[in-house]
Image (cartoon, rainbow, N blue to C red; front, side, top):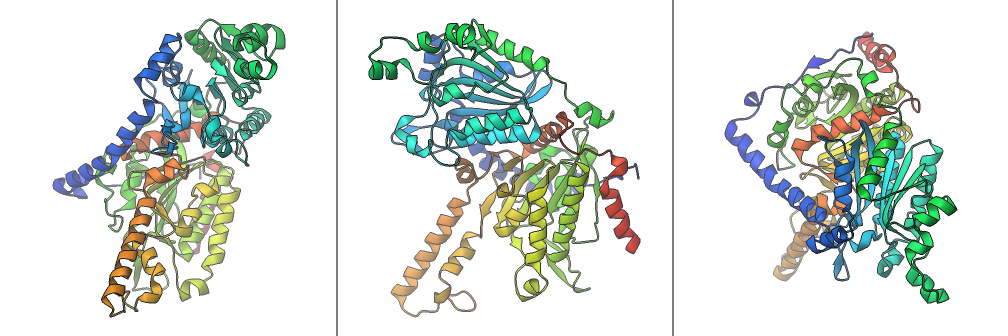
Length: 575
């Protein structure tokens, strides 16, 4: 029972695909992923070199320079929400990344959530969706109990668009509630105030456990310009709320430092005082090992056409340490793979949709299409999800799903009830869950497999992701159903009417296809980040390690007493 029966899975690339097909596939993915690379460069540039020079002229660093200097040397920054507001105009202006950087960053050996106002974009102002992006990062930190570092340089709300960021359940004020919830949960919060800190920006650092200010920083409810207008007083913002006031008189800050570099070093020193990561303890002496089958090969294994199938086991083989995996309940619901592997030396549960055709348990000689949820698969995934939650194992959901099975037989079998059981399980889990939209994320299947509405800590998309209720062609057929025959062909003999229907169907299909673009989802925060397939393994290593960094706040059982062992034994014992 103490032994986790990990087994080698996967095949060498040469046994799966010929070199020419692989290269064509890889180049196709590369073309799609070029948008990710170019989009990141555009967002990272903020409002451009002129605004970077303005920041430097004040003797300050830009937000991204601060994050770079804060991170441990040689470690990677994992930015989330890069493409929020991407491609959107606010009048004649744009807000790259919604004017804020949110990123998982390793500081002094601990993974932290860093939230930094982009001072090259309207002096770090809050745009529409900026508050929601900050709150999303705070939620990730809360769920994983990660130290949260605020690098504040914020001129307050971008007032021309205030109606879209001030009121509402997730308006700017909800940031301060999240500050309070993090504090209530005992999550360390550290704030560095580097410059402007006006109105809501002034409240943001106050609930933090430590607040540092540079000599040119200030925190004010209202800046000098507003006070001059309201009270006719000639006074500077530094006079009102600079370090002389808040460090030595009000007590709203703890210490003053001369400049950005000194403040960043002070924050690093504070993180050093925190407990170290528990990840090494939970590794139990087992270090991270690269997959036997290279993770870089994923870019040539997933077909560009979402209608083409692939071997889902080969994906797992390129994500798990040494390509070792324990599949749980392999003979039940074969359209789904559930099991456990190590990622970076730490155990994680995996759920992935098989593709192609699988055995139909309702008929000994029949096959049925995978990539959908059937009764037995739903039951298996529900039981696996509950067991992982009980054992404290983080779960990675790898979605490529077209939805639930449909039809008279599916309804008679009670798929609604089975689906409700899975949704209930995923809604009440407390173990960290991470969702990856590999390709299709369709209909209620997207919900059932821990899509963003079911609170995964992080949801990632790829350049192949297609998030929608249904495909464009299917929706066009449904829209014009009364004009079509049983074979979905247009039934009218009127040439003008036929042409109008054909054009209408094309327009519906094109609009839905455009809406399924992962950049649309990322822009409106329907997914947290778009990643390249070659980056996926590194992302999972980071996220799984974050799940084990802090201890004592959730159940973490050792493998000897996993419920998964009992579940497997009981099913095998029935044979």
